[in-house]
Amino acid sequence: MNWSAVRAIYVFEMARFFRTIAQSLISPVLSTSLYFVVFGAAIGSRIQEVEGVSYGAFIVPGLVMLTVMTQGISNASFGIYFPKFIGTIYELLSAPVNFLEIVMGYVGAAATKAMFIGIVILITSFFFVDIDIQHPLAMIAFLVLTCVSFALFGFIIGIWAGNFEQLQLVPLLIITPLVFLGGSFYSISMLPPVWQTISMFNPVVYLISGFRWSFFGLADVPILTSLLAIAAFTGLCLGAIWWIFKTGWRIRQ
Amino acid sequence: MAPILSITDVRKAYDGGFEALKGVSLDIEEGEILALLGPNGAGKTTLISTVCGITRPTSGTITVAGHDIIRDYRAARSLIGLVPQEIALEPFEKVINTVRFSRGLFGKGRKDAVVEDILKRLSLWDKRDNQIRELSGGMKRRVLIAKALAHDPRVLFLDEPTAGVDVELRKDMWDIVEQLRADGVTTILTTHYIEEAEAIADRVAVISGGEILLVEDKDKLMARMGRKQLMVQLTAPLTAVPEGLSDYDLTLGADGQSLIYSYDTQSERTGITRLLQDVAKAGLQLRDVETQQSSLEDIFVSLVHKGEDAA
Image (cartoon, rainbow over the protein chains, first blue to last red):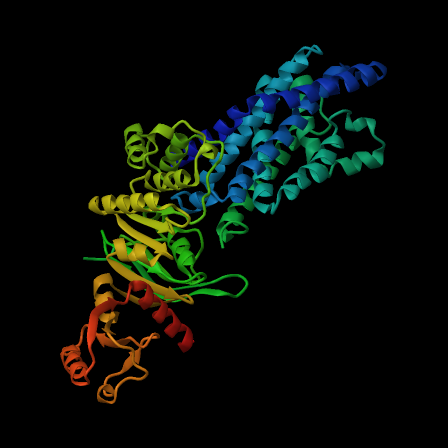
């Protein structure tokens, strides 16, 4: 293993994050606060409790997940797309590194950034609602796994994207609907039976359910199923990236 | 001694079917400076990209100090430094960090003294904390070289290093290449500027249409291919080459006041003595005599055209 390369990529990518730390933090914190005002205060006052948890607190795990997923994807996709766009990818391709080292550097940094912002969101939410985290270790595990798996997914998008529009397309067209329909703001059990069945095909449901369980002990699906789903998603993304580097798809002719 | 870089029958066909390299073989000795000359689209950059791992060869083998670039890519690539043709740098990164990044990427531990030395040699030390976007084009090119040298490569590829660079910087680049040679670094540079090859290369390879047309010691090449021209300036203009000189393949200058004689510098008899005697016999008065040697550029153009005619 070329650990020095992993570290070099990681440090380089984190430097990009710290250069723009204000922008990186202000917008997620602001949008989360808006969610609390709109969903927590305005709508929440009419819903009051979901399965014994106040609505304001109930949406916290979903909000953190929403942020972490979109951040993981956008950071990783931008991280690898930008070198492709400006041409600095030549150095990566001519360096003595394998796909795993490249992925560890880029995805590691993207996941770290997403995690950092996710934690800031969580801290922000403490200002709006009272939350006890019942299973803190499980919470951290879910957070880390989600950051990593969605950063992996973002990495694939970044390699696939041929322009900046495409870079935005997948998060906008696929991820946002999946997250909104994945039970971020409601419990799946509140839906009519048909929609409950359809929701089971949405991978994000498993992530949010597992994450919410670590907070309140409440879950839409069994916790083990959640873990399996996220492991399968991670494995799938890793497999796809391995194939990309093996065939050189969109990066090496 | 085994060559440091050995390219054997390398072919590269792109997905569209275009064959950029048609069986290139080339051995490069350690410590030499090889100039790869060729017109646009000849396959220079494809050849370099293939050696460096940016594109994959369709067939053929390449070894760097005995390491196969595919099977043993880590060892092979860590010996190579590449300065690409296009300026490609992270605009918001600091000069020193981007050089450190390159060193780390190639598996070398952080050594600030090495980075400092490279930056100083390239006159970038004062700019080390500047963001790259603040630098001029020439400075950016220096940063690219610094990055390529950050991991102490033994083989350096310079893909048109002086394209769009002013005269002073070009001279600086040549000095840098000379210094590297003194350190035992092998340099392969592609260039459009024949004067560059003429000035610094030990050997010249000419590539055109994806094929190596010739590889030869620069001095030998110039001597072998070098045709010389003797211009005899006359005091009075002529309308035609005089009868007595018809045995020589002479051309009359446009103004009629000069006779031009081409000869091969390598042949035993150049025929100059006899020509001058016959010029005197023909009753012509000489005003001046000068000779001209064809440059590498002329040689290059004639070679490439020959290759095109044959194709």
